[in-house]
Image (cartoon, rainbow, N blue to C red; front, side, top):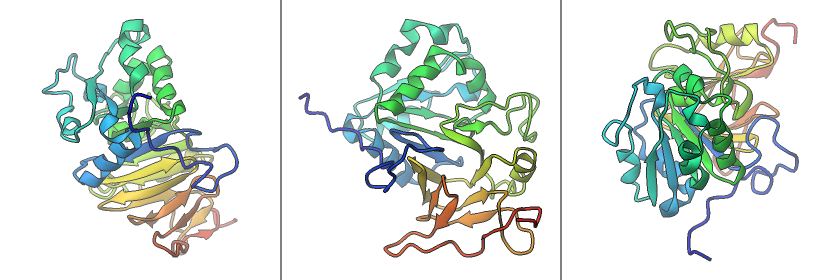
Length: 290
């Protein structure tokens, strides 16, 4: 025994009451997915708790920012050091060949957490998709760790990557569409209410009706374990499910802080001691033929 505090275990089977392998979320570990402009200390605290508390060993990936190089002053590690964790390491490359080397992946192999900073998500994809680094990110989850990210670091975690066009971030379905897929069959958007983006995911779900659209407002996160997530932070999460409508033809609905969502059944509930269904959405296809 080395005296380290263990990482918080996944709730996918035990505490979450799931007896089958998750179909959307991770089988092990957890995700913390933030809609940008993260200020609520409770989000950082939850991430660190899931990573092992004071024994957390965090990898910070600033690659979405698009710079050639980063140091400790520009990588975004300072906020995590303030959480009194064991180690925080900046990891960056713009070269997929480097991301395939033993030296580059070594820090990830001992990590309990990976955090993706904001910027443009296609930079992350160009550097790491299909590399040994991506494999090591997955292994962090497999051994019960946590992966998180804000803004671009949120969108990269879906299977379909929105706003991935190199010409600008207003194009929802651009020249980069493949994310890491930590949440299978999903498209994740960010800054949705603050930047009046609440309608933007509709075109993605209409083009790809198999996807679940998840829109996160700023300073708001979902904490995913297994096939369930909880909303924490200051604002709302929007759900875009082409088999659910609100009112005559509403194509999204809101989950408030404390609310929960089952990614497998696509059912939302309010939090509290007596969870109850979110008011408004009903099982009806967007075409009105459901």
